[in-house]
Image 1: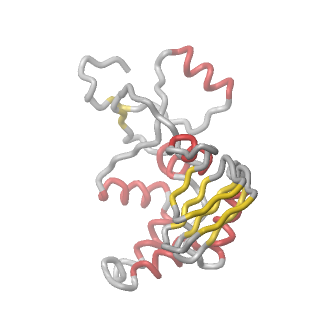
Image 2 (image 1 turned 90 degrees about the vertical axis):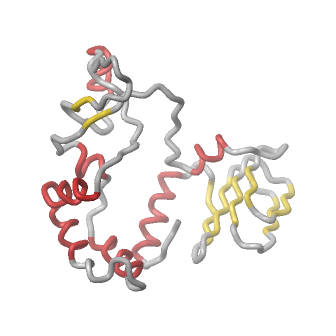
Image 3 (image 1 turned 30 degrees about the horizontal axis):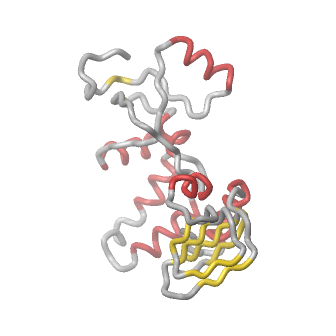
Length: 197
C-alpha cells in the first residue's frame, strides 16, 4: 500500500470489519493493511448499484419510495422503510462484499464518536467535568452530559455519570457509559415509530 502521492486512491484487496484479535495481529504484522476510520465517500449511482448487488432487499424497499423523495411525504416513507430493513451496518452489508473499494492514506488524529461517552470526553467541560449544552442549573452533579436544545430550564440535582438528551420527541436519561443498553433504547424507540436522535 505504499504510494508516492498521498492522495492516490489504492485498491483494497479485502475489507474486514472488526477482525478478531488473532486476525488483527496478523494484519498488523504483515504491514499490508491500514486502519479504516469509517469515513466513506461514493457517488449515489455507485452506492445504489452496490445495494442492488449486495443488499437487494434494501434496494427494493427504497425503490418503492421514489415517488415520495423530495416531497413532504418523504420523511414518513423513510421512517417506515427503516423499520422494514434488517439491522446491518454498511461495513458488513456492503464494504466487506464489494470488490470496488479504494482507500486514500491519511495521518490524522481520530476518535470514533460512536458513543455519548466519547463525545463527552472531547467537549468542553465545567469545573465538575460536566458537558452542558442547555439552559441548565446543576447541583451536586458530576461527569454528566446535559444536552437540551429547547429553551426549557433544566434543573439537575445529584447525578453522577449521567446523560440527559432531549430531541424533539424523546427525552433520554441514562448512565453516560451505558452504550450497550442505549442501542436497545434506540431500537425500541424506532419500533414505536419515534425518531430518537
